[in-house]
Length: 240
Ligand code: F6R
Image 1: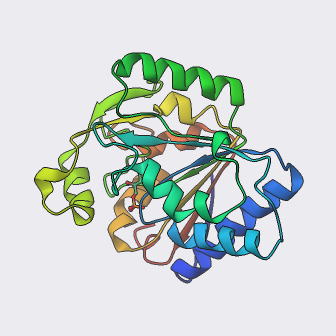
Image 2: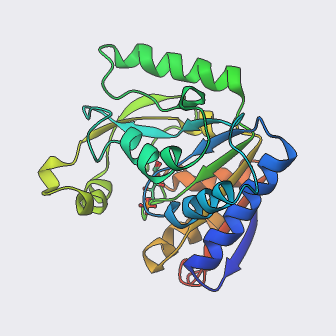
């Protein structure tokens, strides 16, 4: 695991965007794993700028998202499907048919999880972008989740509901379940880039980088992957 510590959030966004741009330039039909949340917003804006300036194209890029809430329609403004269209897909030249997000509205969620995992196996993710929760979750793999899990339906941890309540009118409106790539699904990616900024992530970054590999710190499993780059600002690195 390689760790790059940068001055601030803006530098993290620039560095991560440069890596993704270079990967797409080297392989125009890159399979890119994407995350939602606050962490990738700056980086997505840089990718939009690069695409609009014709530095690179997403025309043949395929994307797979990590997760989606259970029970929110794609049109709900807090669904991850809506987030991805608004924050990235609708502003770049990607073909929407090449973008994939698990459905949290499927009648049979088990079947949806199986379908999504088969899709991941078929596409084979070249580069997976990750954020990290303050409890060190990756995707929605909360502390205690088995490292052997593939795509599955999961309950969100109390800390996650509290952290995500900022996007909803009340904490009771936050969906309590999600469908997420499992740890074993995430580890199938050929290369992983994790970004984190701010002091609220400092303990999670510490257990991921320095802690024992343990299911109590889900991100620590990344120590076992051969190609992981962690890009953090000084605050997120402050407990290292
Ligand atoms: C989002 C995801 C989550 C977030 C994490 C950090 O698709 O899988 O693991 O990356 O909760 O969220 P932010 O970036 O909002 O702090």
